[in-house]
Every structure is written in C-alpha cells, then in structure tokens.
Image (tube, rainbow, N blue to C red; front, side):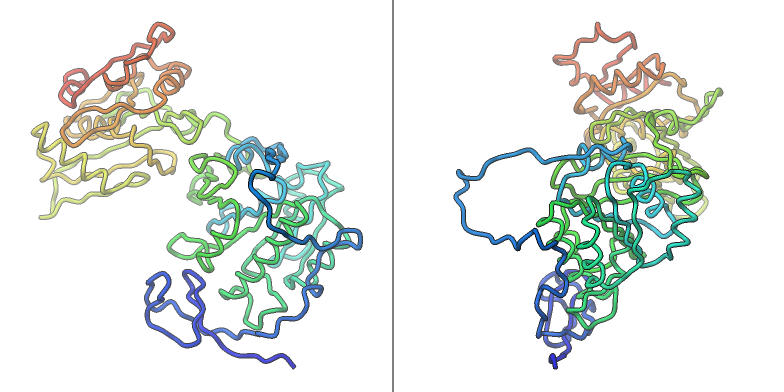
Length: 458
C-alpha cells in the first residue's frame, strides 16, 4: 500500500515544507501554509496516459542551439477577432492558456461560444462544475450548431485522459482547473498540490500532443487567480476577463503571453445571445452628449496595438471634512495625487481644500501615461466650472515640473481622433519632431507647459 504523509504548502508560491512555518522562506508571505496529504509513492504514468497506441513516448536529448531549426508558431485564427488579438494573433498549437475572472462575468459563455464557432475543429469541453444539461441549455441560448463539439463532465484526470485517448481532440477546454483531481495526490480538489499536479499533467499533454488547452480558473477576493502563484508560471498565457456586472461591457486582458504582447485587450458586449465583439471601442467609451459639461475631457490612448478615445470625468467640490477626499475609478490614485500636486505647485490652484473624484467612463482601467493631460484638463474644467468643447481631445504625459511630455505613436492617436470627427487635438510640442501634420485634416495644437493648456481652454 502506498505510504501517505502530510506536508505543508504555501498557498501563494507552492513551496513545500515538512512542518508549518509562520513565514514562507520562498516568497516571504505570512500565514500562508496549509497542511495537505501527499502520496509519495507515485504510480506509473500510464495511469494518466493520454496517448493512442500509435503515438510513442517522446524522449528528450541534449541538442546544440545552432542545430535547432527555427519555425514560427502554428496559429489557428478563430472567428473571434478580439480573442485572436489578445492571444497575439490566434491560438498557438500546444499552448496552455489560463483564463481568470469573477463568478458570473461570462468566462464559460465566452469559451463555449468560441468552441461552438470552430466548426472544423474537434473540441472537447471538460466541465467539473456544470452538468451536460446545463451546458446544453447555454448552447441552445447561443443558437450555434456544431457537430464537432464534445462534452465531458468529469473531475478525475485519470478518466479525462482515458476519454482523450479515445477521442483525440484538437482543442481542449477545462472548466475549471480548481475542480480537477489527480489520482497521484491524496488532497482535496482545489488544494495547492492538486492544482499544481493537474496543471502539470495537462501541460505535459499539451506540449507532447501539440493540442491547445484552455484552463478556466477562479479568482480570490483580491482579484488574483486562486491557487499557487506557480500556476501562472507554468502556463504560456494568462488572460483576465473583467467588467462590472452592472454594465454590459466585458474586457479580456492579457496578463502574460509567451507568444505575443501583454498590452492587448479585447472588448465584448454581453447580450441575451452571448458575447458580441466590439470592434470600435471608442464609440462605447465616449458618452453621447450634446451640452458642454464641466469636468469632462477626451483622452487619445493606446491599448496594445489599438488606438482608443476614452472619456475622463472629474468632480472637484469644496471639502466638508478636515481631510479632503481623493477617489479614482479606473485610474491610479497615486498618479491622481501627483497631478493635483503639480496643479497646486505649478499652477497655483488650491486643490488642498477640495474633494476630488475621478472616473474613467465605460468601466475600464487605463495605465497609459498619455491620459495625464486629459485628466489634468478635466480637473481644471471642474475646478473652474467651465466646460471643454466636445470636439477637442488630448494626448500627453505631465511631468513633475509642469511640462507636457511626448508620448509614443502619436500619429495613430491623431488619426483615430480625426476618424471619430474631432476638430482639435492637443499634444506635446516635443511630439512634433518628424510628424507630418499636412496629412491630417484635424487641427493639432502643440503645447509645452500646463499654463499654455490653461490659456487655450479657459
């Protein structure tokens, strides 16, 4: 009989210790160790083998780097252009993709919909949470027919690999990785050691069979993917599916990608018939308004390869309490405090006695520093209670001395503003070098300091 013993695992990094410790020696996290049963006498690998009789076990040997033949990754283009974008150009053969998101945000719907749209790809959808009838009901709601789509409701990896051996699918989707259980580990599903072992088995399957595998994962209350941090290191790509359940829009964001950029995002709209791709996000991120309202400005930003125009909303009011409030939604709060300090020091505006509230419309989070100028103008607009013209937008980073700094890919930002019918765009004067303004119909105003922007607007 196999010997069973206990070990302690760090829930953050997966570090294994024979005894409990207050602080993890690997990642330094306090009170992160949990006790789990570990079966050390691991049975032979054929218990969880996925191969057909015709595919022998691959053996590895040492090779010189110069002898390795370079080749581009084989990619499949899916019917979903937004998913192709965040994956770096399509699904890579043999890749392991982890997708995290809050409960009910639409992770299962997104990948069920994409699997059903792949008519010529034999897909296996493994569900450890829902029954076959529940998945069938959702598929009927999506109104997509596919005779190459197969379901398996199972949590044991041993049974899963036996079914994979029979079916030989071209794409595998697991919903969710926290429900799977390996016969090699005695602990409960969802524990650190189970998540690590089941992911390792699926990783081995993906790499040796060149079959792409998507893992849907739960997230913790602080927004990180549940399980050890090593899980994110094992996979090739980590995607985050986010959005406010009170809004119809959802964002698929790349956190890690070995086959492409990590700055990409895809935008969807949740409808009664599934998720609809939003090809022009600028139209949904800018509210339709006819009046000139104070505290509203438009920023020309770039996410990945895609230029977007987003609306920045600010509210500056007299502080009622002793300490002024600073609240930011979709924008870094520390960056907001920095911009307020620049306005106080360089512009002479007394924000120290004002409550300041900032919101990025549409429920998205922006980290592009080129939004600084739009944030600053929205703050000034609300402070003076004077509206900014609807057909003017901004692109510039603000420095600590009050200068407007240059931003990258300014020509794409200007072209996007022109395409959406804006009359003026204010940029940094340091961006004018090498920029051909004759090819744009939109009026481009170049400024060097915050005071110049104030004079132009107010």
